[in-house]
Length: 82
Image (cartoon, rainbow, N blue to C red; front, side, top):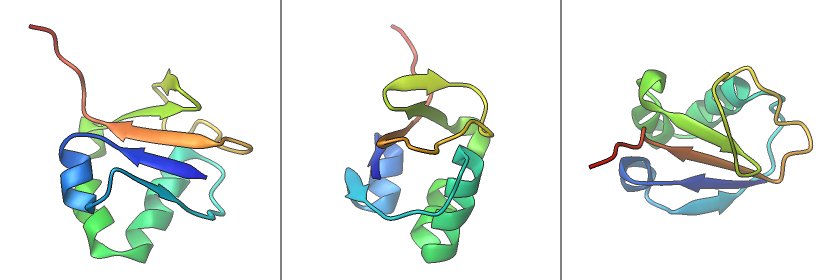
């Protein structure tokens, strides 16, 4: 699965994207799985209320959304206009 990180998430994790084999079935499970891998994920995901997520380029609002068979997950901060 390709996992993309944008903005300050990319800075905290240290890479713009990763290709990982994951066992998670939901976005929330994926976050928990990543946090177990390394402290940098715990820092990046410490306040999940600040996260927005897209599964296969579709923005989702429910972190319990399925990622089964997903090819790409993107994590990014809320967007603002201006």
